[in-house]
Length: 470
Image (cartoon, rainbow, N blue to C red):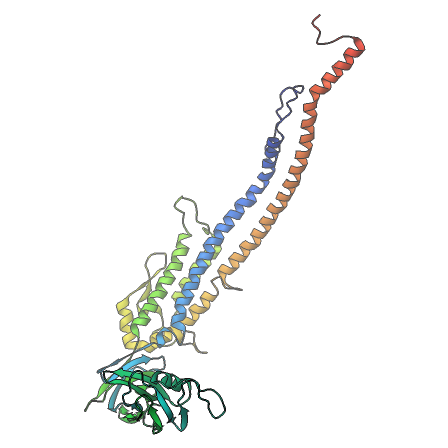
């Protein structure tokens, strides 16, 4: 600890000394005790930053792996194609679909019952009643009452009638169609196919503007789709068919004579290859983090985790996990998928895309089992790596990064307590010193006045003045 000297010139000068400067010097010496603690805190906080970054990248690796190990994830994706999309178009293939080829023949497409009125003038109004599916609609200008005495909303124009129908439960969807000859009321059954007929009775409906009857007749007869899949005959009330081929939704678009459409369901190799590439990239990011911490920064100082035992645990455990081979299946390790550790010492992975694509084409199920299959008799590569990552990251209670951060946190708490305690002592000492030194300074500044007072008393007693020239 350094020393502090007081400089106040001659004791009788009355100048005293700079109390604030003197107190600050003493406080600086007291604060020097905190320096080792604060340096250690800085070191621990740098370690925390590095560990947190590694934990984040381990979490990203876990997410990338999960897309491959999830039974409803990437490997479950399917693609579908049709040899004639003007007849059959595939709209979806889910994980329930099985790769294979199917023959689809469409005999007829489904149609929905529809009905249409004759032409009316655009501004014509209606009167009377209209029956739809046995329910009577009384035409009103907005003032008529129903049998219960309730006011019937306006429905005496084509537009208001269409709106009125759509707000009720009449089994049809109403629209107003306009063309060069006028306006028509169109009614389309809510039930598709041959069973969707709706009883329409417009015999009491009148065009009040022209005093003519309004006829609503069938415009299209409904029918079910008729088709076959692999020789098995089927029907559907809708042209959207989701039950004929498990996991596949297809649209029946036309039924040309002699049509025979090939529908092919394939595994989504490109999606799997992209997910595996993402996994390799995420793994290499973690390895890169660890490798960086083994050296020096750009300024030449050691990285925060240099020599930290957690670093060695992470490296060794990850490399063992990627070399893991399962005991069952035609594909037992990453190398067979074209994923190999680089020859350099850092242990990053390289991906041979052509090898991966070839293995997916020839042995998709075993490639999937490498990541997903798990039984009482053996553990898959994916299940093993998932377990490893759960024990390495920043997940409580056993993650290696989590435990290292917790250990640092305990030390940081103790160090911060030491600093806080010392700051409290320094604050109290500063207050005490300021009071004492202010008092001392006041005394020094009073010395000339006291000496002068003594001189005056001496002169009064002796008659001698020290200021006399004689």
